[in-house]
Length: 341
Image (tube, rainbow, N blue to C red; front, side):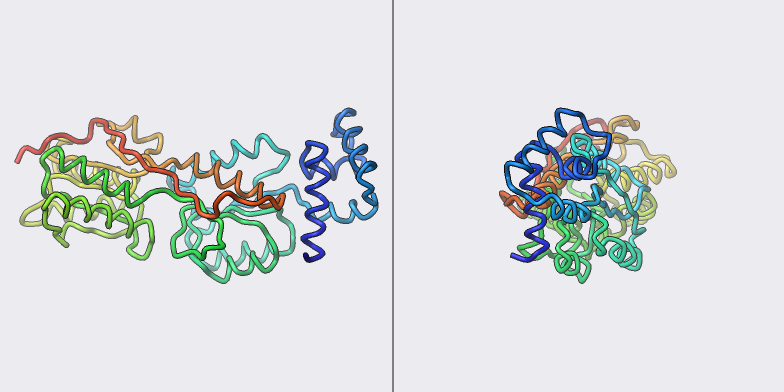
């Protein structure tokens, strides 16, 4: 075991025996006033009984920042906001603080963030939509910084802790729902084809069509980005087809808002002229008109699970599983109806 690993074990052992967090032990040893008398006495007793050398523990605790870093692409949609909410819910029960950084989907921003955290100024990191098995993840490993990836974009190695959702199942559920309403011309607007979640949703969509004996029409599969503009532009292109769809499965609720706008711009009604299904079930989905039928991705729960995993990694406790996939469910509302054709 390396010296750094031994130090972390020492910190975790003191905190665990005293029933407090690592930052609390740090406050006691540095004679900070913001610790209750009872807690201070308990920590002091554990240190004394365990035979730890106080000066060594002080040196070790200087490595604990009390900060969890979180890297997200942006805050332009409610998708990452919901994940952040789940992270915050768990951290509120600890003395750790959350430091939020945005990449704006730029690798250069990820690299700048990495250079700031590898100096030991973080206790751990949560990466949302991080690129796959990249140099950035390898460097976090090399610097012994615990991390968890949420909703990964690429392929991750077996040793990378990650949390995701059942995207293939979500794609299948959405398509099966539309098929049950009599739709046969079903379009899908997805995200970037290079993203694992996009490919999985399209695969679920294809599987549902094939099982129903419905031919897959390549014209109805529209990649793009998980933004409103993609939903708008691709819906306009679908409506211009000689044989347009009667239903659209959008890859995100944000995309679905673009679908709504395009349909209304063409004078079409929802769900009379077009049924629409989204993906994510962000809060907006239930309050738009008509309320959006969508695939619920448990975003806040993904944040909670990732944070719980990270806290266990920081304490050097074993994980039950390094890859967790939370199930997706279909939420039927008012934006879907039987086809008129």
